Amino acid sequence: MKSRTDLSISIVTPVHNGGDNFRQYLSSLKQFAPPETETIVVADGDEESGNLAQAYGMRVLQIPSAGGPAKARNLGAKAAKGDILFFLDADVTIAAETIGQVNRIFTQEPDLAACIGSYDDSPGATNFLSQYKNLFHHYIHQTGNEEASTFWGACGAIRRDIFLKSGGFDESYRLPCVEDIELGYRLKQAGYKIKLYKNIQVKHLKRWGIISLLRAEVFYRAIPWTALILRHRQLNNDLNLQWSSRMSVLLVYALIAAVVGSWWWSGVLWIAVVAIALLLIINHPVYQFFNRKRGIVFAIATIPWHWLYYLYSGLAFAIGIIRHVFDTTQSNQNPKTISS
Image (cartoon, rainbow, N blue to C red; front, side, top):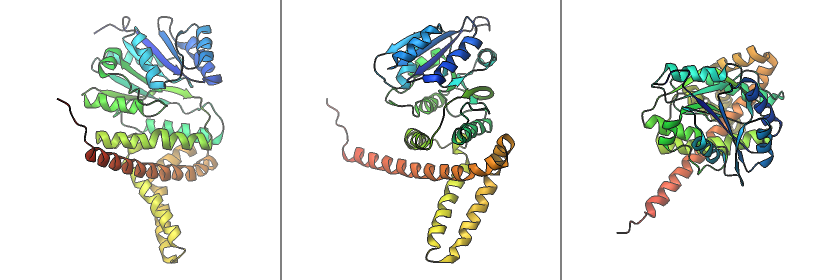
């Protein structure tokens, strides 16, 4: 095992239409990355961001047309020279201690293959939806299991030799999707150890709007993640897949069914009352968290959005199951022939 002074880190970041968030990210690297840290920016069909990164002294790899973050990260990883690949998104900022924390972790735990961090509790965008979403993400990671069941590309580090041996990210994901989760599943199936370090925190700068949030949550995360769960047959009681979340999905649909059914029979409204009570009880810790961070008014305002999250998560899971069954049926009906 290499000593701490010999253990080198390469930061790899894909960027596409980086904008001001990317500028803030580069500034944080310039301020906090030790001089010996290799910093690689892969400009994914984004010459402007590539030029900006060069102006900040970063090593830049240019991809003429966008191929997605999976392809960009793989390209950066192959070009990197560090023992540890530290993947960061282009819309976060690091803290003064971030890189040193990663270095110490891999030095002190030679059997550790990869680690992931968390968003902090001070999101960069100030609008309500961004505060809610990014704080909720912080809460999910801060209450997750330390023995992680997946990887996270926004703030995740992995030994370079293991990353390359594992084949890197799946480049069939052309959009920011679940390529990091998919890599984590493969790492775990191969017997590698991944840990969540809750004290490694980066600030998320992304501004969420209603359309951008729903599009990302449903089409880029929930439906593809369902396909992964069914393919790998892994439904771990961790992060977004905890039993409380699964139960909340069922309760939200029970609530909707009861409200709709009350048009014909008012007696079913008691089911809605019970569902509301159970939703508030089960999710009390997260609402208490929002209250502690932003006050009671903010916490109350998050409730309908949180329940909407359960609604579209359940819908996306159902769509994913239907697609999986259809694809499996089609595959069985049209088996591939093997030529001799």
